[in-house]
Image (cartoon, rainbow, N blue to C red; front, side, top):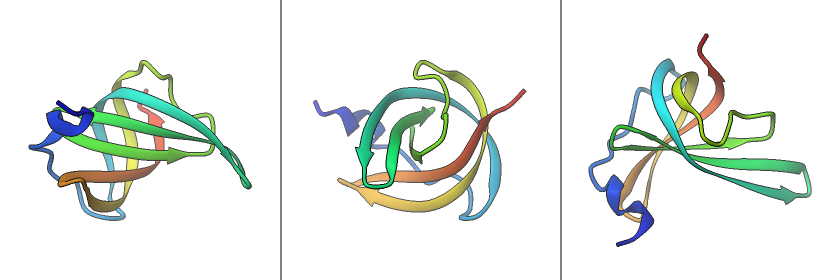
Length: 93
């Protein structure tokens, strides 16, 4: 069983450019460096939905579970899994 298998029922969340609040769990955070500096890729779940966030700022804690506010950037399909790409995510207060 592969990592993405648990997201086989994932659906795209929201509409592109829509700002939403959503309950999430950070599944993992992958730091990396490129010619533009330090970045992080977050893989996030919201129920059975799969969310990806490419972050160049402070981000959110790696073990975060709670509500965030974010903008829907894109809807993609990767390895037959529907993914929602987000940006500008912040923890709701």
